[in-house]
Image (cartoon, rainbow, N blue to C red; front, side, top):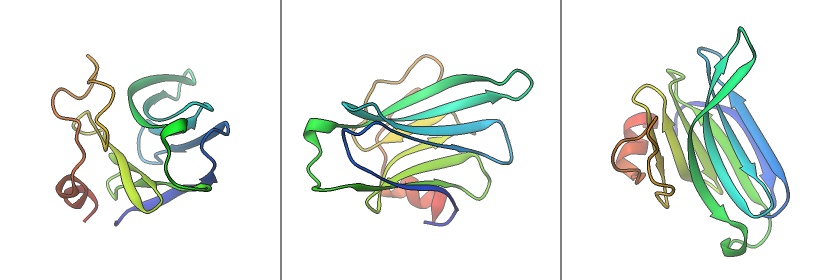
Length: 135
């Protein structure tokens, strides 16, 4: 996967975890959060003048009680070379991806349904989508 690794952390599902990454080239950011019951990946738009933040989209990554891996998870946030796409990689597998340029969010489990702000259409992440962006 070609791009910029901007965040890397080992997390234990069910422990309160928060990993954020802000693009250095625009006003976009992403956040991975485990709130002790679920893991979510968020696309965020920043407003530098006010310090405000707006959540554009959210992708469900896991329910803690359904995680099958034993032990901690290696979580990485990787930005594309154009700084307009960002992937969440967990244990070397891309679980979710935001395309800020085309306002799309993709994930392994395709949940939740698209919101009225972003992602009209299919949310299923595929190897082809990953290769097109990070190949």
